[in-house]
Image 1 (tube, rainbow over the protein chains, first blue to last red):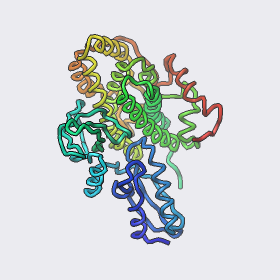
Image 2 (image 1 turned 135 degrees about the horizontal axis):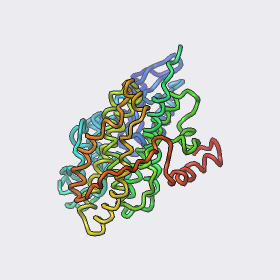
Image 3 (image 1 turned 30 degrees about the vertical axis):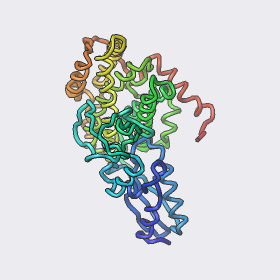
Image 4 (image 1 turned 180 degrees about the vertical axis):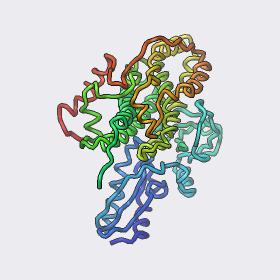
Amino acid sequence: MLTEARAWQVLEAVPDPEIPVISVTELGIVREVVATAAGLHVVVTPTYSGCPATEVIAQSIRDALVAAGGGDVTVETRLAPAWTTDWITEPAKEKLRVYGIAPPGGDAPVGPQPIRFVPKKLACPRCGSTDSVRLSEFGSTACKALYRCRSCLEPFEYFKPI
Amino acid sequence: MTQQMTSPEHIEYVLRLGDNALILGQRLSEWCGHAPVLEEDMALANMSLDLIGQARMLLTHAGRLEGRGRDEDQLAFLRTEPNYRNLTLCELPNQDFARTMVRNFLYSSFQKLLWERLMTSSDAELAAIAAKSIKEARYHAQHAGDWVIRLGDGTAESYARAQGALDYLWPYTAEFFVATPVDDTVAAAGVGPAWSELETAWEALAMPVLAEATLTVPARTPFRSYGKFGRHSEHMGHLLAEMQIMQRTYPGAQW
């Protein structure tokens, strides 16, 4: 049987399947870990409504905890409070940048937002130049937009604030 | 523990939200592999995914409220046409990129307002779904709004297609605000607003963007569509045939 503290440690080593340099805990996906009579109950929250990694993540969490001796592991999906990029830790944001993904800049938008996209000066994660252009609002995944640096000419993805 | 009976109006209101997401998600998915440029292929597929995710949450919730044991898949794939409650706007064929973008703009700008009101629903699960969905709707509306302006205030060709799209789609937006006893019941219970309440706010949001796109908004005519009442256009049958065929041929099949 695992203690809650030990279970959190195990989960800190479970990578996000799409961005393997950060863990599901650093992303703020894991909300609660509760020791039960038979094992562990984990509460997770989905990032985007249609994120195809959601089920994979839940399975990875279950597998990791069972492998570590967690006993009977149940995973519950909770929608509220809604996931926000504000929950991504600062060290995790630096890991994103080193990996080549521009981390979410500023706080997630709340309240009424302008219909028009207001381009922001994104720093290229490789060379640091802010002379970048957005190629697509949606990149390889719904959570990321696609940019190109006009200085070093490399493409990079941007983890959109939400 | 006794379960409070959910009113049929409450269930129908949730189904309407779920069906809009499902049917529009289905239409956007048709662009996968066929969009004019790769970046928009990715955008349309990802937005379709967002909508299908919302549909899953909403249909699962509707199924639970209904209490007849129907899950998200049974509701999505096994109902007959008159039992779908989506707006006719959502089932219309994509036609071309301009019509797709104008439709996305008209729909997602309306959804932003609706989700905002639903965040304070007396139905806690619906409020939670709204708090998630509004974040995605904001990005959809920004993407579509940008394109509507680029296309409208673009070349002669893009302007003609964007204006043609608006001429074709505008009459279907009247349906957003058609009064229905379902909305009255739901509003009285604090579950959500009557959609007719959102007309002024929606026009305030949509009109400036259409003006900046140099597009002319058609005058309102008596035409009304009735998809949200289950009376769909001739396009719905074809859409459902494609969407449902796998589940109907192989009941219970899973990926």
